Amino acid sequence: MNLKVRLANGKEVQISPRLPEKNKETPPETDKVMNYGQMVLELGLLFKELLDVCKSPDQKKLLRLLKHSMTVFKAKSNNSKYAFEIHRFLIQQISTLSEKEAAEVVQGMFVNTTGKPDGHIPADLQMEYVVKTIKKHIKHMYSNKSEQNIANHTKALSGVRDIAEHFDSISGVIVRSKKHKHKDAAGDELMMIGDLRKLRPFKFEAGRYHSAFPDINKSAVDNLPRTDYHTWITTRIVTNANDLGD
Image (cartoon, rainbow, N blue to C red; front, side):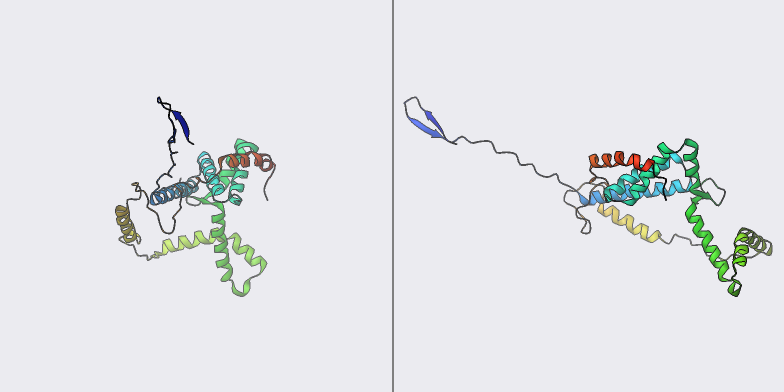
């Protein structure tokens, strides 16, 4: 846009003012290798915490971990069935059930098979062990697989195990097993440590990326739309509060 300016001598000239250029926002530099390391730590520590709560059940800790897990599952897939089931479980634990019933449900999810404080395992995993033992005994019944014989053997499984262990003890049966001087994974772990020292994944270097994960985020919940997530939580409360499960 030109402007006309009259000088002192009466002469008119046109001036083209120079407008300031708009600052173009440059995208922030990122380090995808560092993002990958942070993602591995976030999900790895969450997984380790879930394993720990299975060994030593704690209701408050379990609920905190499930809330975080629900966020991760929802960020991964908007139609995640795991997020839906966790939401229903949380509603039952926080609102529907009494404090006594909620504690009983959590404790009933685990079984202590060793008597030690950290000797719990999931109840469904224990059931898989029982089914495996039953199948093993049924296999050795050969032609005597009648309904009554199977029922008798199943009822006596715990007694059979105790008798067998006691017999091995008084008979001096030697259980031969080799003890490794070093862990099988020791060499692999040392190699990984050497690679990490060279790579320095937690030292920021702009422009780095993994060829397999060129666009990875620094957190599992970066792409989660917060408003939609909160709306999903509130709209499902009444439905899950009235749903007793299958």
